[in-house]
Length: 290
Image (cartoon, rainbow, N blue to C red; front, side, top):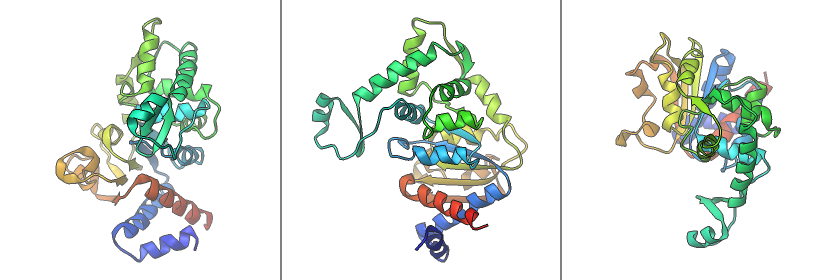
């Protein structure tokens, strides 16, 4: 059975499988209509092994704007610098701490990878303009790394803006702070608000992997626009009953004017590492048959 066959069977079904097929159709239509595709990255996506998929979507013009947590950028750069994430480590957390190993559920990373990150990022910061926006800094970082599997690198090569609205909430933010203690350095966060607002149009679609700040930053870009997102797709494990944005339904965004009653919306309640590779593979196979 091919992925296309599997999605075809899902399309006959309901519940989670039916939603995955619906998500494939919505993503495919976004690309067919030549929408500007906004991708939100929340949660530990790079440590989970999703970085290559994201990089290839940017490389193949299937994503045009990225909004990420600072942590995902940090871990992307760690791998680009030669660090790595691990699985299969044994031991209780106190023992891991003594060994210099940090745990992210069942993914792990050694303290040495963060040392490598610090050495490289401090060198790069010395070579960039001391006054720039966060998205401009992401572009500069992409210029200085070489890994084809880095989504920051691919974004630089494809001129795809990467926004990090919660930049300081990350090791990258911490390293930038440390650099600023001995060097003149200023990041303009406000400039990026105007920049992302300028990217929205009447042909725009949003894909949210998780929720949090990236989801809100993408959605709020429509608040100063006469348009709404024509398409929106989210993969989440959160629930709407608690009032948090990560679990909020996409339909709730109609009340804010971020999507409309005619927008095509789909929520897949699933682990991103299960659902998104299936959705991407389904979309790719459908396009390859045309």
